[in-house]
Length: 248
Ligand code: SF4
Ligand code: F3S
Ligand code: FES
Image (cartoon, rainbow, N blue to C red):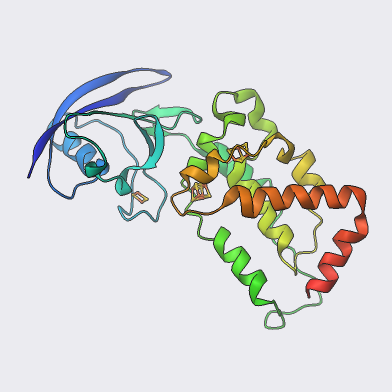
C-alpha cells in the first residue's frame, strides 16, 4: 500500500545550501532513488541527482541517507518506518556541485597517481600462469563499483581536507594492495604505499568495509595485509623478493 513519506533533502550549490522538507508519495517495493525521482517529477524539477543503472552496479547514486552513506537505488523504503523523516544529503567528503551531486574528481586524481600493472617484459600474453588463490584474491577487489562511499566515510579525509593530498583513501589503497599481491607485477609498491599514498594514516577503523555495497573486506583483505607487507619489507627486503619468486 502506498503512503506519504517525509523527506528532508539537501538543496544548494556553490558551497551554500539548506535542507528542504517535502512530503512525497511512496509505493510498495520502491527504493529511495524512486522517491527522489518522484520529487523531481512532481515538486522539484531542478533537483540534481546522479544515477545511471538503478541496479547497484554503476556506483553513481552514492548519497547519505539519515547520515549513512548508501546507494539510493539499493536502499529500500521498507528499511524505514513510514512515520520517519528521511534525510538525504550529498556525500560529505567531496565538494557539492549541486544538491545531491558531488565533484568526485579527487578519486580520479588518486587513481591516476597509481602506476598501472607492470608485468615482466619477457612474459607474453598467453604465457601468464597464476595460482587459483591469486586469481580469487584479486577477484574480490575487482567487484568494486567505484561508488567512493568508502573514501567518503573514512575519517582521515571526511572532515580533513588537509589530509587529501597525502591520502589515497581505502578504495585506492586497496588497488595498490591488489597490484602488490599480483604475482606478475614487478613494481615494489610498499614504500610508495606508505610514503606517497598514505597507508600509515589508516588506523583500521573499518568504516570503509562497513559501507561497501559489494561487501568487499577492504580492511581485512587489502589494508591490513598491505600494512603487514610494508612491515616485512622494512625489516627484510628478501621477504619481498621471495614472495614474488615463489608465487610464480
Ligand atoms: Fe564502493 Fe566498495 Fe569500491 Fe569502496 S571498495 S568504492 S565502497 S564498491
Ligand atoms: Fe579509513 Fe578504512 Fe582505514 S575507514 S582508517 S581506510 S580501515
Ligand atoms: Fe547505479 Fe545506483 S544508479 S548504483
